[in-house]
Length: 90
Length: 101
Image (spheres, each protein chain N blue to C red):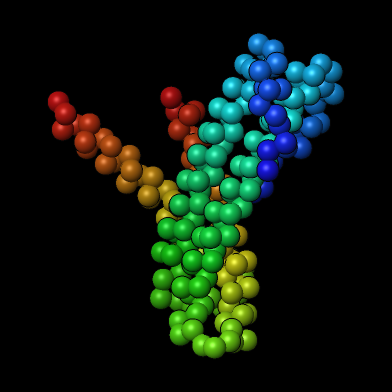
């Protein structure tokens, strides 16, 4: 897959190295957000379609609300848990 | 946020690379973007397959039945729409919490 030779990498100048490091960091945080979205979608799709068959490919307003609420309440729960555990430390 | 490799287009649109170092840098960055886009797409395919198999094929027969086939197409479409809704809501939430700080 890789077409970039290892020896060429050693000839990179200082500023290019820096740029690449920054680029990787940015891509890593983008990737983290995307992976979170994958997990949230998986979780909320299951929750919002539980006990009902798929009858069409679109999302009506109640389905859309279910997904948004699912995400926001999950994040609220996450914050609550973190706060509760932080409170116990003192 | 676009689903597949949004940064690739932005990277190649900037000023043309002049030195060999800059050229190599672009190549490396493009390759990284591409690999992440592939990883993202792979993850999406795997999640959709899992969810839609679970939802649509309750009793696997010796063929994919027409109604199962239709269910999978609809499920796929619904899942991708759901991905976009969650993506938008999550990014809104991230932006809200960074504004509050």
